[in-house]
Amino acid sequence: MKKTNQLYEGKAKKVFETDQPDLLIVSYKDDATAFNGLKKGTILGKGAINNRVTNHLMKLLEKQGVPTHFVEELNDRETVVRRVQIVPLEVIVRNIAAGSLSKRLGLPEGTKLKKTVLEFCYKNDELGDPMVNESHIYAMDLATKEELDTITRLSLKINEILGEYLMENHIELIDFKLEFGRLADGTIVLADEISPDTCRFWDSVTQEKLDKDRFRRDLGGVEDAYQEVLRRLLGE
Ligand code: UDP
Image 1 (tube, rainbow, N blue to C red):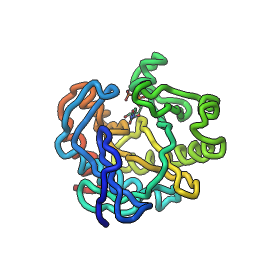
Image 2 (tube, protein in one colour):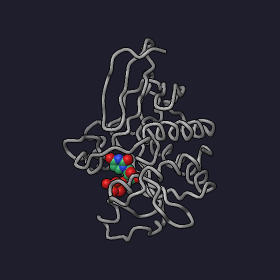
Image 3 (cartoon, rainbow, N blue to C red):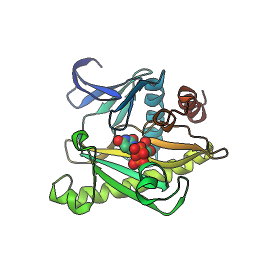
Image 4 (spheres, rainbow, N blue to C red):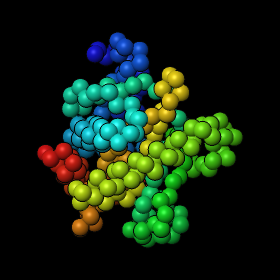
């Protein structure tokens, strides 16, 4: 597998085309941003950790029947994935109130939610990824009803699988963000990443934060927290 031209460079990853038209190579960076790019920094070793954690969790999900874009880990930072057309939605799944939900609804961080909350945001940096509901999604033709039903069903299933698996490793899954893509034949698959950049992970015993909130909120120990997630999930 050979990288050809760079297709895209985002805040945390680069994406390359390859000699196979339906396969891409994702390369994870150590760059970190928060608050829609306003806060910038570097988290040493983050790229390799996010690559390996994402692939580990994608493989677990695949085994349990969730289709993903994952193909093969190439090295510490790089992974082969299937080419998809990204559905321009960020799907946020919440089990415990934190972050923007706490702010918006006045729920103290750590409040257990009686039912899992699903939120959809329109992926658009210029607009700051505004939250949208089902009718906005159809009105703007962001996804069809059938696609949204699949995305909803898969997101809840992913929450069940990851929540249980992480708890076995003493990590509480507070909330996380997912992105989905369409294969050439229209099949919806999980894409993007699942890592301490995109999830809130709290130590289930001490409630210590093991995720990007350490960077966002200047809590210190950012690298150690990412490393600890890798250690708990991959044993190193
Ligand atoms: N999230 C993300 N990318 C985004 C926005 C949110 O990965 O652009 C993740 C975030 O890490 C958290 C969850 O989605 O695990 C919910 O984030 P929230 O809406 O609370 O926003 P934040 O407080 O992160 O701004």
